[in-house]
Length: 173
Image (cartoon, rainbow, N blue to C red; front, side, top):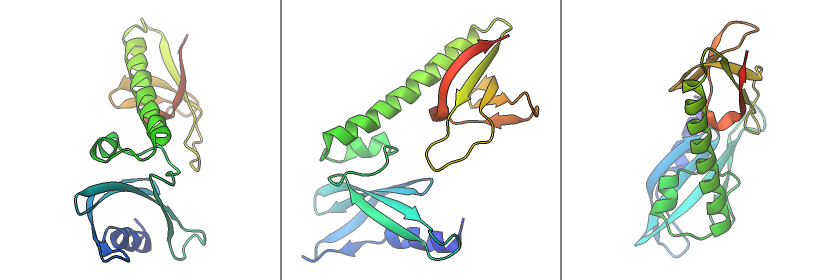
């Protein structure tokens, strides 16, 4: 990991005092790509904060944008346990997060069912990368489902792919 990025993340994890001198202490943290999810505690109150990290100069200083749940956050990758831990401040955003998790679970279940019932046929999964990411292979022929792995027929290489990227699955003769 880039040392400057790591230094920024460490700084974002530090306790701080607001204008009223209330102490805000880090309760939980989770990084997902360039998104840092945090749960903070001030007194008896827990709240969510999303830090979106960026490096506009590609090698220069790292920057961040902080968004609280009321803003709402830009991403829907927040861990479900953080939603369960903190009071709801934006039901619409939380519904999107929960729908994303539900869709991933449904997709995983369908892949497992289809893999078990393939009867000698190839199970092909098509996937689309998250915004901001690039994937140079459009599909895989599944060879295992835990973790989800497959071969790309054009180069014969084996790849792992997160279930969340799968957009379509079908049998291939």
